[in-house]
Image (cartoon, rainbow, N blue to C red):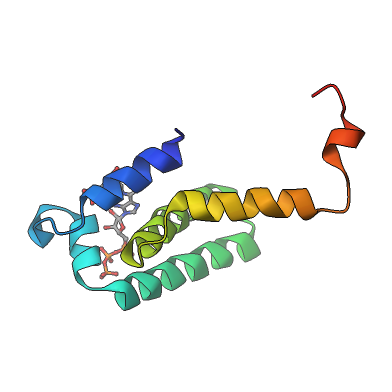
Length: 105
Ligand SMILES: N=c1c2ncn([C@@H]3O[C@H](COP(=O)(O)OP(=O)(O)OP(=O)(O)O)[C@@H](O)[C@H]3O)c2ncn1[C@@H]1O[C@H](COP(=O)(O)O)[C@@H](O)[C@H]1O
């Protein structure tokens, strides 16, 4: 379990909760389209800070992006592990054979 898994589980638990009880419950209650729109807004805010080179604000916006990404996944019932498994699969497809390159790891 990682911090992201813990956060994804917390977000999942907010589904169907009273929208007045938490920001996550309120956002999920607005539906997957609104969750996706919010993710897009947060991504743009992160892009702006990356272009400006503001590392501190990019760090903060980056956290917003990760949180809203998890909310967007939850809104469409896509498990975080499915995304991580896809990344894992792509590592196996990369040009360099990592095991051959680092046989003792
Ligand atoms: N990581 C986050 C997190 N990151 C960002 N946000 C919220 O996301 C919102 C986005 O900020 P904006 O300024 O864009 O939103 P806004 O202007 O208030 O709203 P809009 O007018 O744009 O609709 C803020 O209200 C933040 O508090 C988060 N809200 C919750 N979490 C985590 O989610 C979990 C569940 O939290 P609750 O939702 O409080 O149950 C907890 O572990 C929290 O730490």
